[in-house]
Image (cartoon, rainbow, N blue to C red; front, side, top):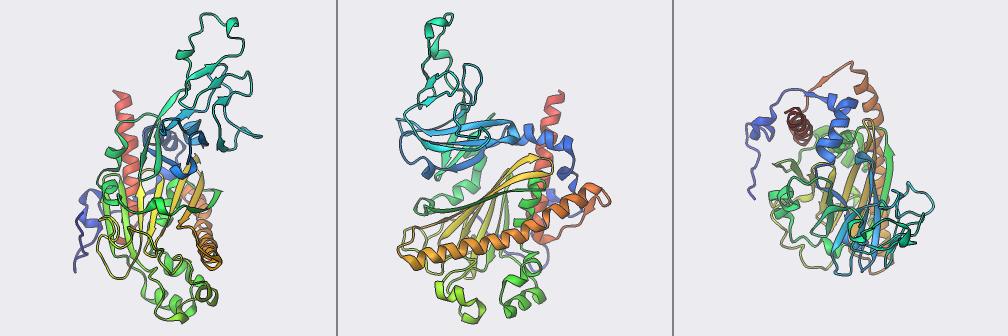
Length: 421
């Protein structure tokens, strides 16, 4: 995977002439008709990350996933053959939701030998086959083999589970060069998980925009840093180490997050005590796979590298941190101006109380930063919707934003063109 250092003259954006350098139209974030087209053109036809294999560690392990953007609910389950499958969460008898607890709209998880409908007790095996029909003799020539659960394409990459309701390509083809470049990172060792989720009053792409550039960091987050470091960032700005596009996907590589800091005054007392902070625990875990990183991670091999952010189109972000942990973001649209934001932080399991508290400190610190990023979104959505301004300039550091909106528009245009033929 080649590394292209930024030239003395020129820019990252201009390395990709198809992007252009003009203003960006944010109509794709406020137009209800465009959102409806996205649902079909993008979310129904793309590979969507729904979790990790650790959520179904043994035979019969399952969880449900509500996908409002495509109007369905899925069951993800590990079968007796160890294969992970996905099914529409609907009974084939009368269309009742098959797996749910007290509230049908909430997600659930557990372990079972079979799935039994709460309405009329039809039963399905872990492979989706219809196994039992209550009072089967009352039906007319019922062929149980024809009434198994409706399966959804499901594939696993590096422990991440993806589904696709209408696949146009394999998961491997979708991930392409980026997927190959990340293979081998020890994701499987980082099984201690901390989770946040909330509904955000903005278009799904706007929150991705917020995390896809660091141009905002010295301004929006300056109060979270100690005064001296905050002033340096605010006065001199921030520039990342590397940007790259991979088909519909993209990444930004940044400095920061090196641990421990050379100057203890750079961090807060609690961070010194727990040897942890926003960039995660300072002490790297003793696991294989962190010394020789896959080529897509820290592609510049910069000694000051701290974190890489990968946008896996359409709505999955994967952030790998130098101290040896990672986090994921999922942005699930619920309307043109609303989405469900999910964040998961993954660490190697702690060996003692200090390590556990260090992970918890990193987790709550992350939440404060995320709240600051999210705080701007509803205001942005409101003013975009006013259409008082429709064209916006974006700078070289905002190349991933320019790319995301271009890809979304292109996918919708191609889908509409095909539908019109």
